[in-house]
Structure formats: C-alpha cells, structure tokens
Image 1 (cartoon, helix red, strand yellow):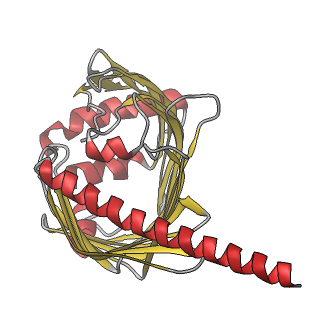
Image 2 (cartoon, rainbow, N blue to C red):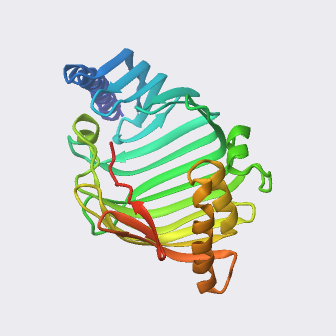
Image 3 (cartoon, rainbow, N blue to C red):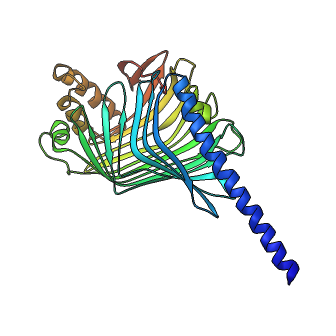
Length: 333
C-alpha cells in the first residue's frame, strides 16, 4: 500500500510539472507569435493571453484580438478567442469564437453574429503544425456588410479532411440551410416575389489540391494556392429553381483553370431574371443571351432545364456554345 501511495504521489507531481511546463510554453509561444507578426509589419494586438484548465486541459483565452495582414488587407477582430485542448492531446484543438466578430477585406467589412460558433482542428505532430482535418459549425449566423447587404443562415457546416494517397490535397465539404437574404437583396434578385423568402439548401463537396501544405506558414508567410479541383457536387435549391454542378479543373501557377464543369439548372429563366435584376447582366444583352440559352436548353429536350458544360480554356470561359469572356482566376489572397 505504501508503494502505491508513493507511486500515485510521484505520478501526480510529474503530471503537475508537465501541465505547468506545457501551459507556460503555450503562453510564451503564442506571445512570441504575436511579437513576430508585429515585427513583420502586422497590426497584431492581444490584450491578454492566459492558460487555464488544470489538471487535464490547456484552455487558452486570447482577449481583445485584432490582427491585420498588410499584404492582403485582411483584418479580423474579436473580443476573445478560446483554444481548448486536452493536456495529453495538445494537437487536437477546439476553437470557440465569440457571438460577435468582424472581418475586413480591401473591399468590405463584414460583421458576424451567431448563437454558437465552434470548430475543431486536428494538427499533425510537427513544429509546422500541418492541418490534418477540421470541422466548423455556426448556428443562427447573421452577417451584415458595409456594402449594404445582410443575410441570416439557420446553420452552417464546414469540414475538411486529407485526400488519401495525395500530398497537400483536401476534401472540402460545406452545407448551408435556410439562407435568408435581406429584403433588399431579395428585391434585387427576385423583384416579382415569385420565390420563397429563404434559399432552402446549399451543399458543396469537392477535392482540391494545393501547391503547399496548410500549416503555420500559411498564415505567417503565404497562403497555399490551388493546383486542381474535383467538384463532386455543388447543389443549391431556391423554390422551383435548382442548380447543380460537377466537374474537374486543373489550375496553373497563375490561377488560370483548364477543364469543364457540367451545369444543370432548372427554371433557368428565373436565374436569368436574377442576373438582370441584380445588375450582373445588362438588360440590353438579355434577348441575345436568352435566345442562345433557349437553343442550349432545346438540345436537352427540356426547355426549362439547362444542361451544358462550363468550359475553361486558355483563360476564357464559355457556357456550352456561348462565350462568356475572361475566366476568373483561382487565387487565394
């Protein structure tokens, strides 16, 4: 019995020492990371970094967080950020975001509020902290922009995992339910009020390869850039309007894509109405575009359904036989 007590006491002292060492090292590492960003010209302000959770957890709280990357113009600020991990699994982190936070880009500032926002991040056992897999869930998310638009979403789910047998490739999935744009946005997209107030479902499933791993250098140095895309499913439903897409693209070092994405759109004339109402398509071009799309729809034998490839070739994009102009570039800032 005496030996057992001694063993328990020694084990407890060792564990207490490990927790004290780990929590102190974690706090110093985060503080050093913030100092390094400042040295690189970032605006990096955190009023306090603290670690709690003894004896089995490392619960880290950063308060009054403000981060700005001068190269990309991206900025994020929040009253706090919590990073929760088990002491014996420090590479598996639960991130808890506050109910309100703000993200700024060179084009707009977006304010986010939600009832609950939480994510799980699984990192590799390396000093570079490579991303293995992640999940993200937000409930009753509301977004407002300085450009004047607003939206609310009942639930947002996002997840990533590595693609087996492929280096630096991730499977990415997302699902949004009950997307409710503001009245102004609905009036622009659907001025006749023919569609429901909510977009019922948006779903994304794809594999994407990158030219570098997503690790700490993705934040500190540069974002990995996409090299290829295997779109397994993009699916959106809004009343009688249904949109689906699937296909594959290869992407060069300049973000120029080559390949085809097969598009299927039901009630496509309403989508055309939305493009004209929102200003994405000039009303003067509508007759010519509509005539061409009627021809494409007629080829499938279903006049209300478009079924044609979106082709990316030599920096240009076309839909079926219709040239649309320069293709967008796939570049992550």
